[in-house]
Structures are given as structure tokens and as C-alpha cells.
Image (tube, rainbow, N blue to C red; front, top):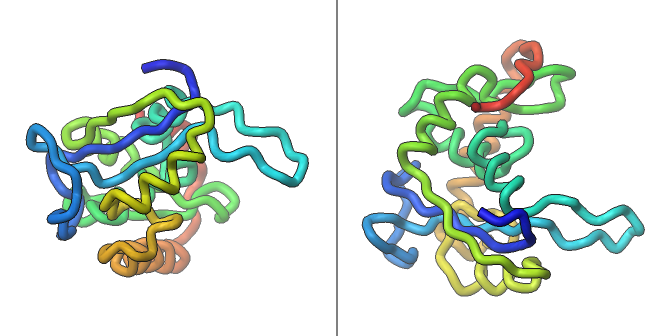
Length: 177
């Protein structure tokens, strides 16, 4: 996988929830459910642009934690009951992760998720087009037209609400490696 700017897609063997995938791209027994870019669009407020690339970003999705990956947060919320994990607040209480469950989430992803990518110098120019033209139910930003959008937002909000009711856990350090 190149350490360059680009667009990536997440394909799944096993669906993380009861999602209508009739409009999703399918290939070789896999279903495309999510697309992302790296780096993000440069800010217009004078802040430095992101130094991320697709290699770093995909690694963060696979081995990081829910605080640093919206995909991990989404997947964890959807498969929590199946694999026995729970979203929790950690450290100062501002960050949400699956704490020790990040390892179980990484295992689920290793068994069920594959990634495709293309190098693209300004990937943000393609991202909106992809989300508008593909059925990618795990994307939230710019995807409110998707039939799974409200269900996904509710699942994430419910998990965060439950986490707020529980004690804050110590920061476990490294994510789901």
C-alpha cells in the first residue's frame, strides 16, 4: 500500500448489521460499505494541512481505536453485541473507545474487512462524487440520503449515551493491535 494521498474503500465479507445492501457494489463475495480519503481537504483557516496518507489512515482504521477512526466507532457500535464489546469513555472522559474491546474489534475486522485504494493527489475532489454515486451505508458525512443513515446515527448516539452513564476508564494506551 503506497504512502500517498488517495481514496480507499472498505469491503466486507460479513455485514456488521442488518443493512439493505441491494444497492451496494459487490465483488467476489464482498460488499462495499464505506469509502474514505487521506489526507483530508486542506483547511481554509490557515491551519497546516494534514500529513496523513492512505497507508497511515488505513492502518489507523485497522489497528487504532474508535477515538481516532469514525469507521472503527461505527463498526464497533454495530457489532458490539456480537463480539462482546462496549463503548466507554477513557482518560479525561472526553474520548470514546472500546477500551480492551478494541482488540476484539481488530480481530473482527481482520476476519471480515478488506480494503481497496487508488492513489489520488487531491482525494477530496473525488470523495463527494463517490458518496453521491455509490451506496456506502457506513459513511455518515454527506450521506444523509442513505437508507441506513438514521439507524447508524442512532446506534452511535445510543452507544455514546450508554458510555456517559458508566465510569470513565483509564486510558489503555495503544488501540486494537
